[in-house]
Image 1 (cartoon, rainbow, N blue to C red):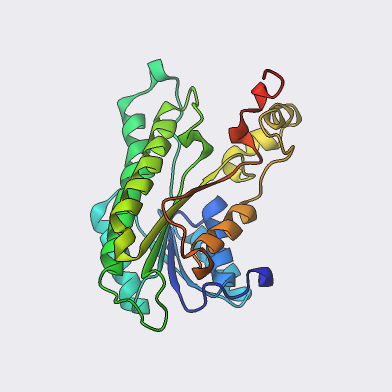
Image 2: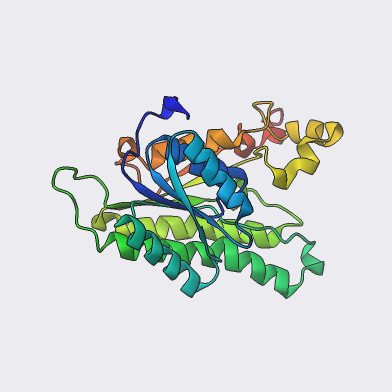
Length: 271
């Protein structure tokens, strides 16, 4: 268990979507290490999700799995209802689930455009709305006047960096930025905090073909001023902080975890 996180989320109930692998897996484990009971959301077979729960429990934490396609309203609502029935409340939603359906703009099929939008943007809307509706059923605790609920959106540096060949993904992540800030504005006086993390290049299976190839990795490093690829745990630790009471005055903010990728390193010598 990562003791460095302390028990920042002690007693809280968290749903992490797309938590069976990659960044979602790391966030689920970190939140459990910080004292939360974590719902490990997945789609399809539950083998990987159960493995995450096993890792959580082996480390002394608490977790359970829940299958739901975040692009399906009925499945999202059923998942949140099941979490509340099991745990009595919901404190944190980490909307991490996402997909890529890559193609050149001129060749992109409408099915691939719609698939990315359904998961990466509509899925965020459905999960955030479901969580916020549950938060509003939970009265503020006079003994702890902090937020009644927290929503954390996992975005991407490509919410601001154009990405040719990935226009559906980039468009969806651009939408995440405006969506997050808009609902943060709308729910702040309800004491619901909404923030985002925008990772850059993080070492996960989805981009193994890049970081595991020496030449491709060398080219990647030209985009990262800090000179190395990020680790999922670095995103996860920031997620714990943003969902903790230490961050109670933070809402509507995006934290870029990218080793400086959004500093546009190609311009370093062209000032």
